[in-house]
Length: 320
Image 1: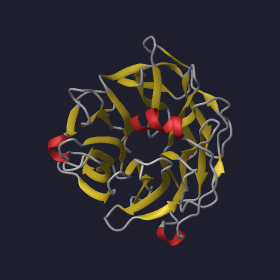
Image 2: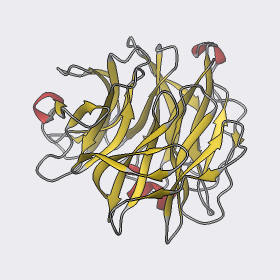
Image 3: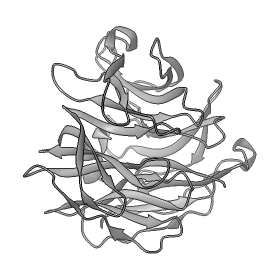
């Protein structure tokens, strides 16, 4: 999630429990909601009930910036995430109850690069991640979940990988001047890279971020971030797009100078949760976690926030 690297990691502030949405608005078939919060100290991973209630701290990093960019394994038992300090950045794994946190030892990466945005393959045996140099992605890589020598799947300025439920495809976005904001897919081995969305479909000045596969693998939930053609003020959209490409379908459109990041499908496929940044053009914005029906409808608040709360990185635990 490119948004998090810049403003987010510098802005995270102390976490305290927000109020939760009405539990009836979220299906009981969904597991825990997992996200990042932080404060004057390092950011850390939190798990709550699916309706946003009963938040609990899962990780306890000791150095800033901290933990971010988490994804839950398909069996719902483990979380893979990035842990960063001022001098290093590593991929870590922790149990869904916050136990047995440990780094994944990776070799074979290019000099002066760092791993970021990890996600498990469906069988949990491998991790797909982006590799960054100077905060810019330079490719999508793969490593065994137990660690070892990494292999490059896709060369280029690509980030935010997500893996299809059947393990056959990856989706990611482009982050280069010449190819900025396009949404792409490839086979799980990195072959057959295709563009499925660019600005001609999303709107001039709009770029795609943060793809997340639907549970049936037929769609992606994405952020479309852009600016108003008339005022230049920024806004975001949560949208769905077929894995085959085509025009996106908007689920939620933010007011001007507000933003959305980190969409995540619920395991039952009925809901998309996302982080809502309220009025980020002004000092002290409010960040909250909202949801919207995947079939369309009104948004609702899952985790309410105040100006002292910041959230990022969102995922939903399958209930097995």
